[in-house]
Structure formats: C-alpha cells, structure tokens
Image (cartoon, rainbow, N blue to C red; front, side, top):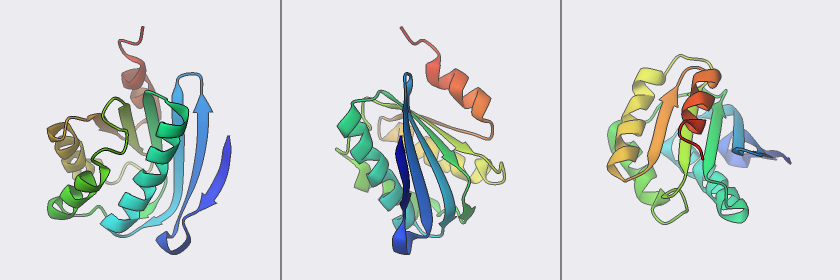
Length: 134
C-alpha cells in the first residue's frame, strides 16, 4: 500500500493499493479542473509503470466538476505514452452523481485505444475489470 498522497494545490488525496488483481486508486477531496485530472492520472500512470499492473480500479470519492469534452480531450492528449495503452481501467464515481457526464471520458478514452469504462458501482466495476481474465 502506498499511503495517501496529498494532491497539494490540486486539492485531492490519492491512495494507491496493489492487490493481486491490479492497482486500486482511491481519490478523495476536490477535482475542479482538467489539470487536476491530468495530475491524478499522471500519478496513477507512474504507479502503473512501476508495478507493471494490467488492471486499474479508480474509486473516485471526490467533489467538483466534470470537465467538458474539449477539456477531456486535453486529458487524453496528456496521457499518450504514459502506460495506459495495455491496461484495463474501471473508473467508479462512488457518489454516483456524475456518471452520465463522465461517459464522455469513456468514449474519448476508447477513441484513443484505451480499454476503459465508467461505473457508479464498485462491485460491477470489479466484475468488468476481471471479465475474461486468464
């Protein structure tokens, strides 16, 4: 387990746990801008590269706003070459209040070749994440 890391000016806190099935990233605090999301995913990407995991479960307990599509495109441009290309990512909006707006991110992620999905339920996310696992 990597202890909670303070997001500093980002306003979020991130805890990374490596399980036998992959990486679990738990995020709390506030995410207000696409720059916050970029900072969050860059830190997750660093751990993905360090550990070589092939599955990531992001449990988002944050408050804030979901950036519009134009800003989400900036996120995916920043993630190019950061290690997510061979990783299955399940993103859980634990509060369940923004899944429909986050689905734009899922669509854009798939356009960039990422295997990702957005959920409002951790159990369903874990099932999807492990489906087809050898």
